[in-house]
Image (tube, rainbow, N blue to C red):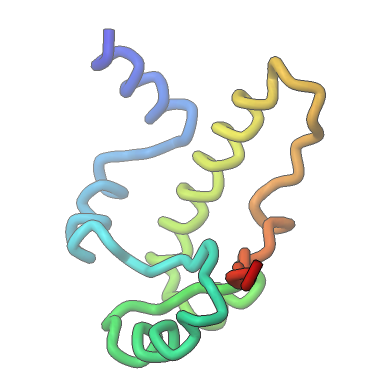
Length: 113
């Protein structure tokens, strides 16, 4: 059943063998996408950005300036998968689907209480 589910998901997301080979060429990590961080970790974030060896995406709107065409194609597949997951997870809920481009980076700060 898992094999069938994976095959159907690949068809739904238009994932081809060439996409998998491309991802392998990047060591399965074509870019780094920041989803959130704490204010205390800002120095670490700057270090990651300079030493990561991969582009760091903090805002999807800036991805086209930081990624090459192959990386952008892989990001597009990632966004499509995330949007599909969000739509399906909200299917039973009354929440509204917002999409990846509207999701801000989460910046957490520790409260002293």
